[in-house]
Image (cartoon, rainbow, N blue to C red; front, side, top):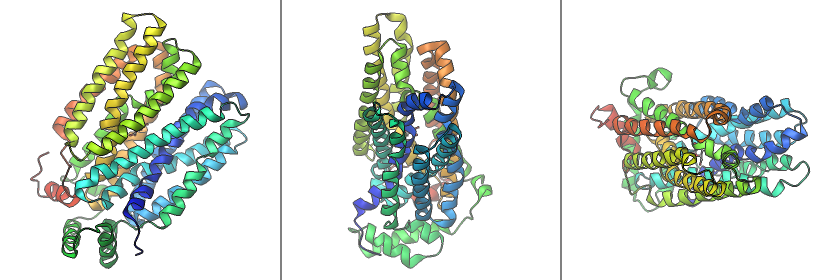
Length: 449
Ligand code: BGC
């Protein structure tokens, strides 16, 4: 193996997250122009917006499990190609049907990447830095969302600007494809296929500071945890693996039920609802996008210092408070200016807690909790659960919001309260332990689940 820089491995390993963020975020601004250009009905608009989510749940179901068979690298390359083709065909689509089909295709790459990237990063990283390195995925997602907001803003005044907004994603897709060609395959996956020499070579290269015997020890541990089970759907339901499936799906579903994407996709709607004008609404949304990135950078630094469970519970508690404030605020004041600022402030508090905790940790844990042979499959199933819930919330939010206004946030607050109980009683801690230790604990039923 060529001596490739670790920073580059982690950077390109996480780049799929950027496309995930960009492609899901870009439609919020683009739809305003697509709907007039293509004279879409509101139903058609809804379908164009959610097509990517539908594609994502299909992609997560297919692409990630295939990585157990064909390897992580080949499937990331496949996703990168789909990203490029999907972006270009969305940009050039001549009617709504082609646009919707292209967005579904693009979505399948988003869904595939959403499960593959954290899994690849978790498998490459040493245990003590795994949280930080896997947070890179979330940093890429949030940067992707922010870039999409910015590109939307820049091209809003160009005729046919929406085509540039959608097509722009082809550029990082090509970079992802080329970069991935030079990435090493995951040594853990190679070992599961009996390719020990190659795995050793890659791991030795990745752990530059470790001596040979330490690397040999890591290899031995991976082999030991490999020896005891076979792979497949049935295995996910085995008694010792089932708790991880419940955790994976539970975390994935709660991440969406606490309402994050009502903010990410519909922030301008929320702001205009409380009385802000269009331009202040767009500017405030940009502010939220920037905060989301900044707090994720903070998460990067603290991720391996505090237990994941404690952070999740802290995050949920903070979000409960901000959601309740958001919902009761309109009962306190009817002054547009006060309401506007208060909404912005509470949404910022909400984003602070999400970006520090539930944003990164859900995807980190999806790459950590499953035993090696069902890791792709387990991450895929959890990711499908995430996209399905995302799709449902995104589809019904506008009509419920029209009916209940900001009172709707009470529902998300209740979900956040339930998430605290879920984390406390169902989730086990993964910080600082190697993937093999986690797996062994589960297998020996000595787990502290
Ligand atoms: C979630 C996305 C969300 C993003 C916001 C991710 O962890 O899975 O649904 O849009 O965070 O930053």
